[in-house]
Picture 1 (cartoon, rainbow, N blue to C red):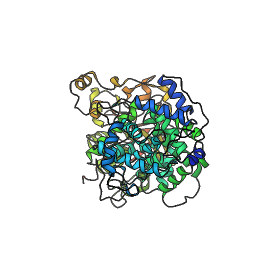
Picture 2: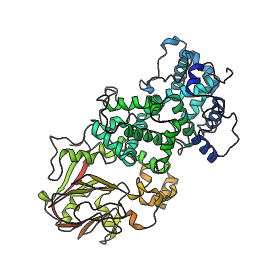
Picture 3: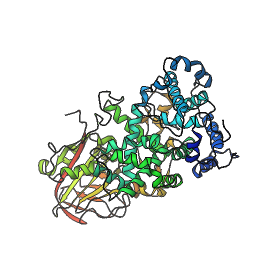
Picture 4: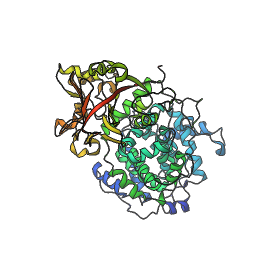
Length: 562
C-alpha cells in the first residue's frame, strides 16, 4: 500500500481524481441499523482506508456455506489455472457472458488480476452458470484488498452466502432473467411515466429492462458504483432495484420531450449512465432511490419467485447460445396485428394494456375467452368461459363509445367458495383502466400509499396447514407454499374496503369497493355503473351510469400452445 492506502493494482492519479480521500479513518458503531444509516449517508465514502475496513468487516460477517474457498485456496490454484496463459491473453469465464471488466481506475496489473481471480472463481464454483455482474464486483473489491488472494476470498464469501433472506448476486440465467422481469414489474408500478416512454420508443421494452444490471455493474462511474456497493453490502439486493429505478427516473426527467440520440434506447440509457455526473451526484442518486416507497423485501421475493416459476414453465432456464445477444428468442411482441381481432380495442390499444400487465404474463399472447357478440349478453356464460383461466382481462365498450376495463388476477371460479353469497377475492395485482376518451390506469391504492398498511410476518403468508407441511417437507417448492404476490393476507389493512378487488354473483359482477365500485355490471350485461372506490382510488372510468355495447374477456396463452 502507498501513503494514501492504495494498493499496487490502482492507478493512484486516476483514483485521486475519481474519489478524494478526505473522510474519517475510524468507525465506532457496531449495530446494523447504525451501519445502514451511515452507509446511506456516505460516512466512509471519502476514506479509502475506512471503506476497506468496513468492506472487510461486512463481508466477513456474511453467513456462508461450510466450505467456502479462502485466500489459501487461491494461492494453491492460481498458478495451475492461469499459468498456461500469458497475462495479455487471459480469457474470461463463460458465465460473465462477454461482459467487459470495468477499468475502475485499475492499472494494467489490476486488470490482469481481475481476470485471474475470475478464472479461479470459475474453478471453485462450477455451479455458477451466468453472472455478468461479477467482473465489476471483483474490480471494485480489488481496490480494498491487500492482494489478489484476499480479493478472491471476499468475492467467494459474497457468492457463497447461504442466507435465503439475503440475496446478493444472481448466479444463473434463470435468476438473472427473473430479476429482469421483476425490475420490469417494479418500473411498471413505480416509474409509470418512464415506462410509458420506454414502451413508446422501443420495439421490445423487456429488452430495455434486461439491461438494468449493466447500468449498475459496469456503466456507472466508479465513485457512483462504490456508493451503491456500500449500501448493497449492508442492505442487500433490494438496493440494486432502488438505484436502477432512480436512474430510470432521472433518465426520463432529462430525456422526456427530447429526440433520442440513436434509434437504440438501450444504448442511450447506457450513455446516460456513463455520463450521469452531468445530471446528478451520487448523493442525489441515492436520495432519489430511497425516496421510492418500494414493496417489502418479502413481497419482492414472492414476485421474483413467481417470475422464476413462469420461466421454468416455459422451459427458459439457460441462455440459448444460438440466440444473438441483442434479441432473446422468447421475448417477442405478444399482440400480433395479423391474428388479433377485438370488437372493443385496436391492436395499439391492446399493446398499451399489455405493457401494464406483470412481466410473467407479458410473455403470453391474448386469447379471447368471451365476447358478448359471440356468446350472448349473459354473465353466467362469461364466468363459464373464464373459469380455469388466471389472470383475465375484462374489456367494456359503452353505447357512448367509451372503453374501460380491468386486469383481474384471480380465476373467477373463486367466487364459488362463498356459498352463493357475494364475496371479494383477488390480489393487489388487479387494476382498472379506461382507454376512451383518454387513457388512465388505476392500481391498488396500497402501491402508491404504502403508509395505509404494514406488512405482516412471513409466517402469516401461509395457512397453518401449509406451514406444517413446509416444516415436514423442506423439498417442496416455496413458490407453491406461499401466498401469491400482493395477497391481502400479507398486509395489515385499516379496513376491508382497500382489498375489495373482484366479486361475482349471479346478478352482478363488481370490481373494486368502498364508497362505490370501480365497475358494476348487471347479470344481463346490459347496464353498468362506475364511481370512485377505496380499493383503487380511481375516478369514474366512463359515464357513471352506462349502457353496455360490448363485453369481452381475454385470457393469456403461452405462445408455444396454439
